[in-house]
Length: 264
Length: 164
Image 1 (tube, chains in turn brown, purple):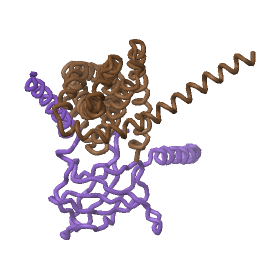
Image 2 (tube, rainbow over the protein chains, first blue to last red):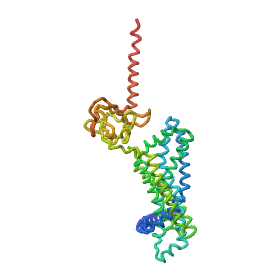
Image 3 (cartoon, chains in turn red, orange):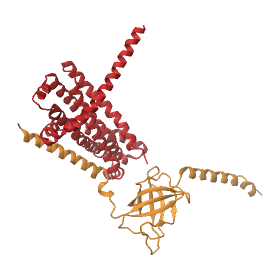
Image 4 (cartoon, chains in turn cyan, brown):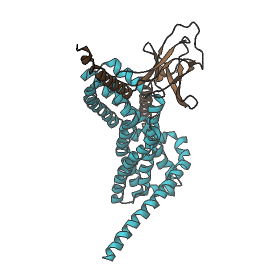
């Protein structure tokens, strides 16, 4: 019996130790990316290529999801608001929930599973097939050549994708609310415009999506670089990217929201 | 290497992203109408501001002519001092009354300016002398109950007096 407890404690200790080890390495990794990102910015073609793979190819899922989320918000919001006779506030409800929360968060979750997992798998496979070691042999720094462009592509793509998600969602809410149900178009837009503040709501949403972009991109490239160089290791790293970045997005969202929107 | 096609797509992507941001700022937000032309500040003292918030609209005849920029508590007079930025295109007489009104039964609160007849105009930094505080629903209900109770007291003996 004591032996079993001992092994349990030992396993727990190994997990915690491992987590702290990896956290420290991830922090050092971020600093190293920043140091070596000179190449990614000087040879911007590399970054542009990665923006294509992680940003442009995520467009369809982001736009379609945004449209549907906005349409659902329109239906659900109308159903609740019409009970209180204030269905003109539908535009406010749709716009505020999208710009403040759903845009950055849902776009972040989609981006993590669509692009983050792909980045991890790609870098992990490069490591498993020893392409990264081969680069080092040729005196090419894999951090500068492979990791930094993918990192910056994620950081650049994420705010743009979140903005498109929100815009598409507002359009979806407009389609359902105004075109389908028949809420007055003038009050839909004018109430939205009078309640949504550019700095308080939209800029804070952009800041959120930027922070999520940094988190997702860092987790994706780190998991790929840190993956065990086996088929199993790469698959585990891909799973961890999606799980950890989803948790990171939701946790960071709580912290950022607590700082940004405390009411006046 | 079809770098040009790729560049084109990334260009489209960035343009669409910035377009979405502009759409959010102009159409969803109020960037286009938020900037008041050379606004000037006016102050007003209220006994009770109710639920008035910073950035609440200032309206006259229902038209938005400014925004509340600051609310603070004056500890000498124990009243709330509300500072508002009023659009420089509009001038108001000195005896303008500022009152805190509510749009709809449960809507947001705003400041309504009722124009007086004074020939002198308010200038930047002036204090509005006449104000009307927010209507507090609880006080209204309390007054209603008291008046009902008072009515009940006076109406009870009234029929007895009428008896011959």
